[in-house]
Amino acid sequence: MKSIYKSLSLMIVILVFISGCGNQSSKNDKLKIYATNYPYESFAEQIGGEHVEVDSIYPSGTDLHNYEPTQKEMLNVAKSDLFIYSSNELDPVSKKISSTIKNDDHKLEAISKLNESDLLEHHHEHGEEHEHDHGEEEVNAQDPHIWLDPIANKEAAKSIKDKLVKKDPDHKKDYEENYKTLIKEIDGIDQKLKNITNHPKRDTVFISHDSLGYLANRYHFKQTGVTGMNNEEPSQKEILEIIKNINQAKTPYILYEQNVSSKITDIIKKDTDSKPLKFHNLEVLTKDEEKENNISYQSLMEENIKTLDKALNK
Image (cartoon, rainbow, N blue to C red; front, side, top):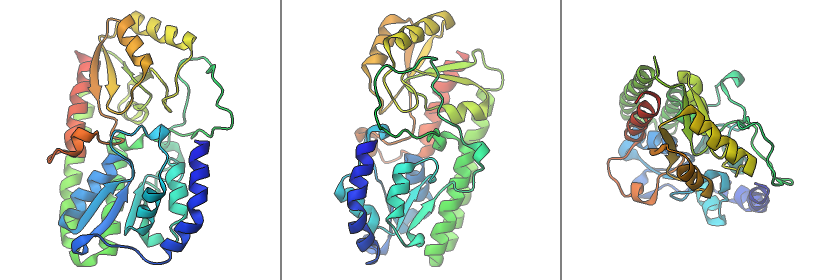
C-alpha cells in the first residue's frame, strides 16, 4: 500500500494541471466515465445507456488489495467526464485519485451519505496475529466491500443517476427510466437474499477472503475468510485453526472468488472435505467475463444468490 501512495504522489502535479485543462469526452459525444468496482461500472452503463461510455479503472482479474495504478491509468481518469468511487472513508486509493481532480463535477462519491454506523471495520477473524511484518504498510481500517450490499447499492445507483442528470439534462428522461428499472431489479435481489437467509440450515459461510461482511451483516449470517479482508496470508497457526474449524463445522462448501488466488486456499481444499463453490465478489470482471455481452451486476448477483443458498441451506 505504501508504494501505491508514493506513485500517486508523484502524479499529483501532472494531474492537477490536466484536470484544470478540461475533460475529454468519448467518441460520439458520449460521457466518458471511469468507475472503481464493477457494480458502479454496471450501474453507470445501465442508467446512462447509449449516452455514456464506461470503463473500470482496474484491469480485468486484478486483486484490488495489490493494485497500483499506472501513470497512463491516472491520466485517463483525470481527463474523463466523471470518476465514480464509493467514498473517501472506504476507498483511500480512489480518494487520493479524486483529490487530484479539482472540478467536483467530474467526480462522485457514490455512497457518501451513509452513516458511520453503516460502515464495517476490518476485524481479523482468526484470533491470531500475523507473523509477517507489515512495516509501514497502511491498511484500510474499514471493510471496503460495501458494493455487495443491495441496499447500499440503491443509494449508489441514485447518486449516479442524479449526477448524470446534472451533467446531461437533455437526456434526463432516459436516465430516470433506466434508473427505475435498475432499482426494481436491485429490490428483487434484496428479496431473494432475504428468502435464502430467513431460516438457514447453517449460519456460517467459509470464503477465500473476508469479502462478505456487508452481506453477512445485512442478512444475518456469519463469514469466515481463509485469508482475511485484505487478502493477507495467514500464519501457519491460523491455517491449522481454519482447517480445524472447517472440519469441526462439517461445512460441505467453501466459496472461492474470481480474482483471489492463494496457495493457502489450495491447502484448505486438500485438507478438508469441503467442496469448492464459485462466488463473485464483484470487485472486477475476469478477462473472459469482459467479453460477455449480457453480463451485469444483476446477472452476477443471481449466480451469487444460488451459491449462498447452497452454502447456507443445501
